[in-house]
Amino acid sequence: MKLERRRLLVAGIAASVGAVFGAGAVAQAKEKVIRVTARKFAFLPREIRLTKGEPVVLEFVTADVVMGFNAPDFNVRAEIIPGQVSRLRLVPDKTGTFVFLCDIFCGEGHEGMSGQIHVVA
Amino acid sequence: MRQSIHRRQFLKLAGLGGVVFASGLAGGAKFARAGQDDFYFVQLSDTHWGFNGPLVNPDAGGTLQKAVAAVNALSFEPDFIVFTGDLTHTTDDPKERRRRLAEFRDIVKGLRNKNLRFMPGEHDAALDNGQAWKEFFGPSFYSFDHKGVHFVALDNVSDPAARIGEEQLAWLAADLGKQAADARIVVFAHRPLFDLYPQWDWATRDGAKAIDLLMPHKNVTVFYGHIHQEHHQMTGHIAHHSAKSLIFPLPVPGSQPKREPIRWDPAQPYRGLGFRGVDAEVQKAEYEITEYPVRKA
Image (cartoon, rainbow over all chains, first blue to last red):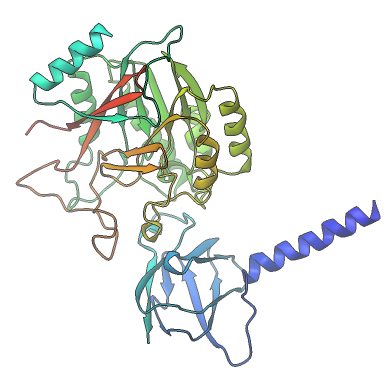
């Protein structure tokens, strides 16, 4: 019973770390950090400028409701939870302009809640 | 069968002949079951009752009624009519949400055919996990059998994160487990089950799990809404057909930077809006889709 409880506890901690930081999201020293605020119904900043191959940690906060950050072209997403800081490490592997959007339906203006990632060489 | 042939001949003579889509791997014609017969159903989608945007649809308060009249005027009585979600336009106000749902329900009572099937869209259900929608229309996912076809209505919208969820997936697995491998299966959903264009949120987060459950079945066809335009795509042997909206059309996926409604053209009112009739030929597992405008040009 004790062993089972310990296993559950470890699984719970692992799950909560995954939820907050996302896979591979632990910031390394010297990595650029960009804070993104999500509010109804916009991301600030709306435009994120990155350099190909240069790691960045995106930090998300919101004071409103649960939202999502999704950048489908990089196959990354994060849950943005009021009162928490969510982090997502991204190493852009291509140049160009790419859409990011809120992927958790958060209200009347949800469908316009998007922005762009510009990646240069 | 005879009625179906007459219906198809009539549609062709009227210049309305649809496009025939074969379902999956049906080929021969050994499939024959009690209660099997060809039939006709109508799909309406994305009516967004309560939407207000004069530049996009200056007749937002009258388009649904026109669609009801157009369905009532069809030359052939459908066996049933399905609404594949976004019955109402979203609102943050729970009272207003219920008011819109009630008005929608009252308007569609004007349909002559009373065999109606409803499904939620994210505009109806995502802000309260489907609570208000269920008060009006009952369970948000279900299955039923009709003349040799097994219909499954999936809810991929009540979770604001656009997940079907493990509970519903377990239900789907159990439901499909009762069907033969060659059963004729039609799935209704609001969002596409596959990644059509995630950049515009045209996807279901765990849609691949539903497709995995459907794959062992040879004859599966999916009818959905959400993207406000006709679109046809295969995932393996499974055919997916999206329907037009009854409020405003949306651009072709990826054709412009933002997913914004196409503006109303006074020279071509109601352009891009419509509903469809589906002629199901059960033995061949073929579905002939005929698109109808809201109002004749």
